[in-house]
Length: 293
Image (spheres, helix red, strand yellow):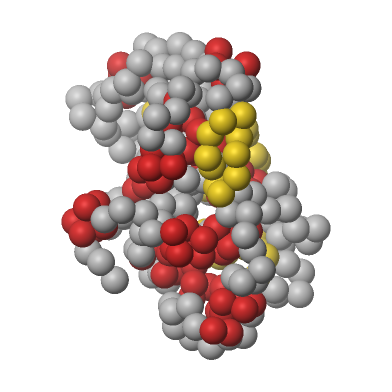
């Protein structure tokens, strides 16, 4: 597996883009679809093999390739026409790191068209730009090349969510113990660990504001007073908040999908925005969330 520095220099590989897309369609998320051989991609392979009883390991062998329909699937990259609403979208200025400055903004929207389209289609910005090197993102009717990674939400409702701190994986299970979905995650840190034991989903908030409290949670920089940060995909908790029965803890999105599994969180469980939204469609207040080591 390449190191992170090698991955930054490498170009997206078509075969890996296809594998990541097929995994995402099965509800086994590799995080960003970027065409790179990385830890989140390997986690997804291992989870899929485990679910389909294909043996342990994180390598795509012939049986795994067949199970994913690798030879049959050709519609990995599709064309998307820029809509009028896309062309009119009002982007935010570059998002500052400082929460006090974020709190003064009207919203924490996308700051560029590549960011918006890449996130909509579950892609890394590098892959999106590689597929659309000369596109006019702000012109309605422009054809963009994007990844077709969407999957139908399973009919089964999740009855248990497991957040595994050791592997950095959040998995949803149905009433018969079957794995419905799996996502790479950032789960707490050594300074602010996630809780232990079992809790329940308390509420689901779409497009949440973010309430910063340095006394109850953590202190960011020199910010010593409570702040309310506006809504938007670049909000610290992203586009969705799944609050738990343990106060101040939840499962949520992120403004930085490329850092999932690579950076610590302040005790909560962080997923990409699209994975958090997928999970929110499968749970309801009362769903059990179990933290494991």
